[in-house]
Length: 224
Length: 154
Image (cartoon, rainbow over all chains, first blue to last red; front, side, top):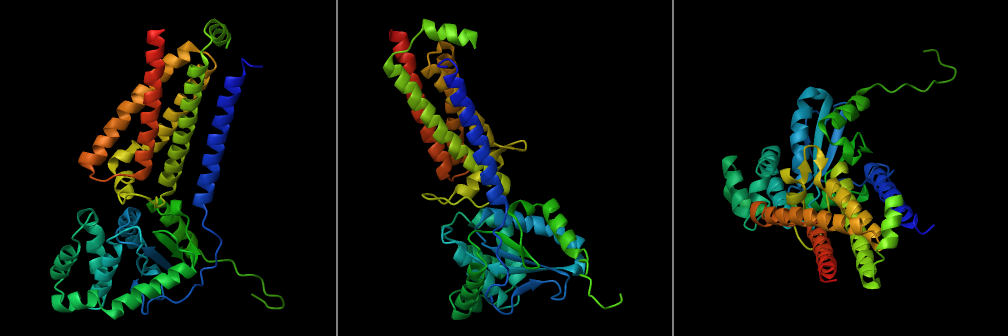
């Protein structure tokens, strides 16, 4: 028995490692089954596309988070394929572990108050590598605001203003009510998407599924 | 198997060596858990939560985090499993396994030093879990050096 013992131990550890890895992967891949009702976020939300689009993709994002910048690239590839059938909502969810995320959210919201949210959103993700290491991020954001032709004095005061604070807080309340504990998190027509559905192919599959007409449940006593 | 049994009976390790190999096996299991965690987080695209540093995403999302399409963490997990297996066999008296453990840990140390260089001088960011793995490999290297030294002096 003793001569087999090391091989038994090695086999047991291999099975445990593979099993725990598979279980952890499964746990991480499946979104928690929470209803996507949630509390209201900032109104009006930042919405790109038609509010009457068949599919509404709501993203909870953090501008300093690397996977969020990857998702930005993915969305750039996916969105044109659906035209008016897809609309995107962005909700602020700056994570406390990212020291410059809140300032970036403030910059985006301040640009939003001058009607240029999505342009700032693009610039923040486009230049993610340049500013996200800090420590002096505000001059970068101010430079982006200047690039967009914003009123810089207003941008500066809005960055620290109460309107921006309220919008970010409202989005975070909505995120918390939906169980958003990390970023990016996507809801597609109210259904939380698994993290591994954030690839180009994964998003295409999820949006295509959401676009498919759902079979009507038969109504008794009524002719079709 | 037969070879292992004969070898085992021929070279019965001292209790100190046995304990060192058991410690190495335990450290390798810790490293394996760390690597499995990082592999799963990489595959699911989740945000890894850093405890002591803010550079996890810069490191884990960099081009150096994959070899082709394979996450580097998965290769690390394989390395730790091989080190664990060698340390376990060495603890039960296999001299060949001990030599193999020295080789595997040597390769792991070289890769670890390269990754530390990348974090410090190329990416300018550190990842807690990578530093933890570097600590595990350093301990394994220390154990291997002691094992090697004891064998050379005996």
